[in-house]
Length: 105
Picture 1 (tube, rainbow, N blue to C red):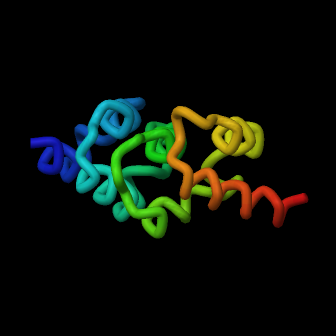
Picture 2 (cartoon, rainbow, N blue to C red; picture 1 turned 135 degrees about the horizontal axis):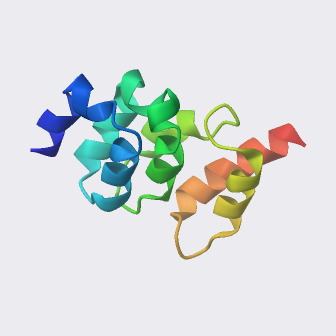
């Protein structure tokens, strides 16, 4: 049901809706679908989606989420907070964020 709703542009244009789906779902296929479709994570209505995808604890490949580990999508302050969060962020994702933050400094 969620995947069919994410394909409807009228529904995804509602501000905050895709971010709520990314926050509340535990299905890795939904997160992968959001990460694959540019219209689902860009724009004013979906500005919080990359951060919500990074915080999601589901077992999504780091390769899929790697594009969100950039200051273009998530602020540097939020990336630092994610790298220090031991309980909320997966270890391999924290490692990827730390590597990116080292290239900025």
